[in-house]
Amino acid sequence: MSKDLAPEARADEGWYVDARCTNCDVARQLAPEVIQERDGRAEVIRQPQNDAERQQLYAAAFSCHTRSIRHPVDRLTPDLDPFPLALDDTVHLCGHNSRRTAAANAYLLRRPDGSTMMIDTPRWSDELAARYEALGPVTDVLLTHRDHAAHGRRYADRFGARLCIHEGDLDAAPDADLVLRGTDPVAIGAGVTAYPLPGHTRGSVLFLADGKYCFSGDSFYWSRATADLEVAASVTWYSITELAASLARTADLLRFEWVLPGHGDRKRLPAEEMTRRLKELTVRTRALRPQPVDFTAVRW
Image 1: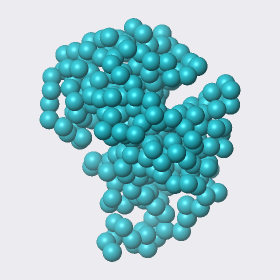
Image 2: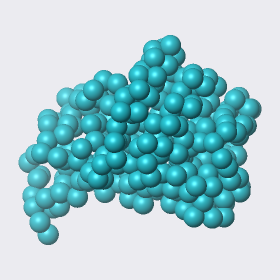
Image 3: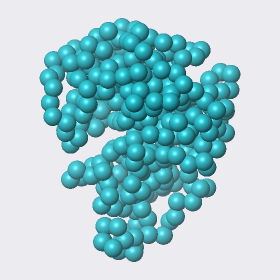
């Protein structure tokens, strides 16, 4: 076993990130005080100094899709698992990101009637499903696009929920119960609307809830590097030109405070500021041209 993978080789150093790290950014979102990017990967820059920082590290470790955040003594027992993690009283972060969704974040959206919707999918386990269902019966599993569909059917069947995807990505979930078509907005439930947004993939969809929460999939995200909304232009599988057109068609229809992406950071701002930034992003995206896929070029 290599030094990078062997806990005993790091026994005097405490928490560390092993060589399996894919630089997905999830750990830095959850533990920004103690984990940062160095040489194209996440690295623990110092050991936690208080309980809050220790809790950040546990959250990062339970989310890491490669289980790369490790400690030679501390074990990740269920009592230390903070997920589902409340972002506010309506949205919870699922954690437990999956290798099969490229480490995408997934969310639980609580509804006024006590039910819940899952947006994109964490890794599958029956134990996790029970944790998520404890927030309220899950009525829908909403997929923003093909890359995040891996565990959708299993969660939907476990919950007795509808599985939803756009026809453009239907081959990723061919047994979906609700298939969105075209580019017109579609009401999913009370206060929840799907906005087809082809670009990142042919079937990309954005879900808007309560005029407050924008589950943007991989269409756009909050970048800490630029302190602004951004598109992942270097990781656009279908068409950056189509993404620009989708944003131009949709931006005036969207009002939200939270941007909650699959990849990239989350952010809450006043709705008026989010609207301004989204319109500015639309203008910037229109000027972009197709480029080769390059994950290293994304500005987290």
